[in-house]
Length: 183
Image 1 (cartoon, rainbow, N blue to C red):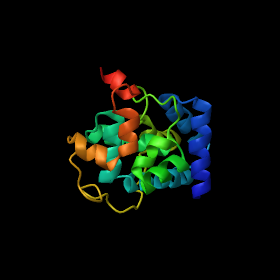
Image 2: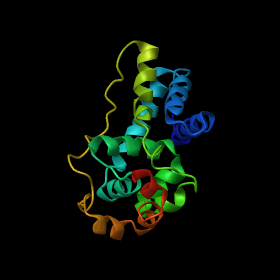
Image 3: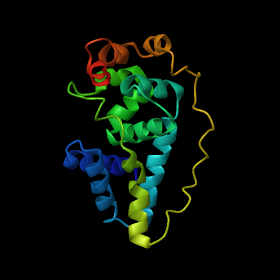
């Protein structure tokens, strides 16, 4: 499976799911089980490589601003969600995490979006359904113990606002959707 096929599966299943991350994961598993185990392993390799690329402090800061929460688990689910949104959103965020403010649709609601845990398991579930065994090792380098880049104090609003000013303005200023969701 090449990168184009990977993104076709991600995009096609997202569109069919209508924005529901759980339905998206289910449709992804369904689509992957129509393939052979080698293709599912390739899909998992593409997914994990992108998941690991997004393990960066600046991306974590963007998640913290957007979701007003970003422990390890939330950040993992956020990275799955970023991939599930397609190549333009993932690559745009990796290029400039604050660009996420412009990449999200106007009606994005951080109270209901930004996390897609089950997407991260889709290839594993599909492989197990196809073979009755666990997905083999993907042959990728081990992810680093710490995120890449300059560490960020994720509990410092001033640091987050300085690093992600557009996200901060859109989701954290009084009267923004995130502010209303948290109130």
